[in-house]
Image (cartoon, rainbow, N blue to C red; front, top):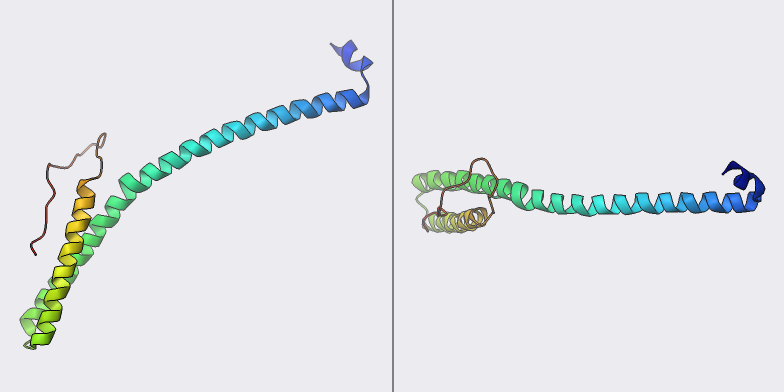
Length: 125
């Protein structure tokens, strides 16, 4: 093997080593691309199955706090126009909460250690 390398020209040796280097680079790029595709699928799954449900529940909690504040304001105000505006805001937030909980209920929970109960709770209109 060494005799063969010594008998070839420097140009041929450089071309052979450059070719081997290109093959290793292409192999590394291929493996990196495959891992990147798998990572993208994992990130999409993480976003859809873990991050969005937390966002929906947190948004629902925030809306419930606003509904509570609106109810307190309803108890304190006598202005009909303001009461109607508060009631409209309560209805709007209730619909948002129902949408958030519906989205949360549609998330696939297979493999989670604490699966949710059947059915999706809704808020009264």
